[in-house]
Every structure is written in C-alpha cells, then in structure tokens.
Image (cartoon, rainbow, N blue to C red; front, side, top):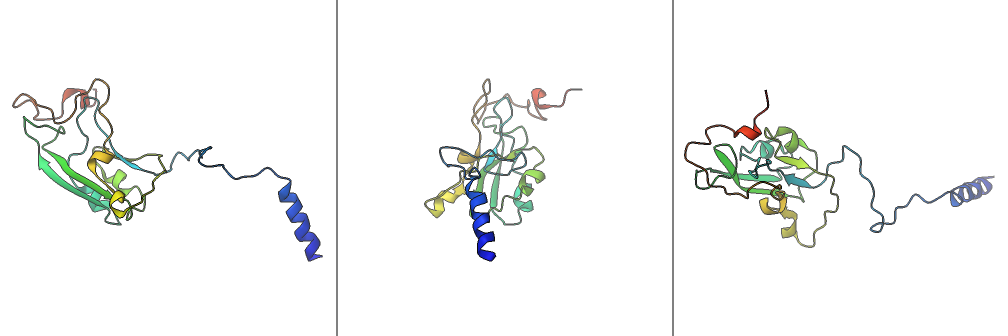
Length: 164
C-alpha cells in the first residue's frame, strides 16, 4: 500500500505546473517588506542626507557599519547639518539585513532597497563604500561638495523643511 501511495503522490506532482523560476531569465518579484541592498539617499538639491551621526552603526547588532564624520564648511558642504559622513562603509559579509540601521537613522539616509543580486568574488568586494552606496544626484540637483555663501546654512535649507 505504501508503494501505491508514493506512486500516486509522484504522479500528482508530475502533472502540476512547475514552481521553479528560471533565473536569471525570469526574476522573482520580491515582497514589499523585503530588505536587500543598502543605499544612501540624497535630498532633491543634491546634498547628502547622512549627517555622520553614527546611530546606524550603534544600532547594528552585527557591527557591520563604520562611519567616520567630518565637519562641513562653506567651501565644502556635503549635507545640511554641521557634519557629514566622510567615510561610510558596510561589511556585507557581516550584515544580517535586519533593518535596524534604517530604523535608527534620523534623516532617513540609509535605506534597504529591493535589490537582491549581491555576490562577491573577493572579500574586499564585500565592503561597500560610500561611493558604492550613494545614489546619483537627482535631476535639478548639484553634486557634492557644494560651495555656499558664508552664514547661509545655520539651519536646514528651505526646500528640505516641512511645509506649514
């Protein structure tokens, strides 16, 4: 009786359509809450959102993020705050994709996108630097560093404040 049940199960699944996705010809659609590759975002004017506060590094349970902050000047302005992330690195071999860095960021600079094609051929390739993470300058924005008039960046610039 066991052999007949096994044969019936085999025939039942042989007649069904396959569930295998033919990757890479056909890519799988990821869920809304999927957490994939990290990106560092910018404001619409081109300034970086990251202010170098290192809260993402403090929140990371795997100690995969390293941030080195530097001071903004009027000649070289990277972010609207007093500081910016001079160095931002994520060790993707240590990252567990928990999203705590995204939750801890006060400026919503670090975001885990839906990109899942993350492969490395060398351990050094698994260290994502700021240049690899930061998104391109949006249309109409200026690249960083920007030169500003002295004393004009005491607070966030007008197009980044909440409308009231």
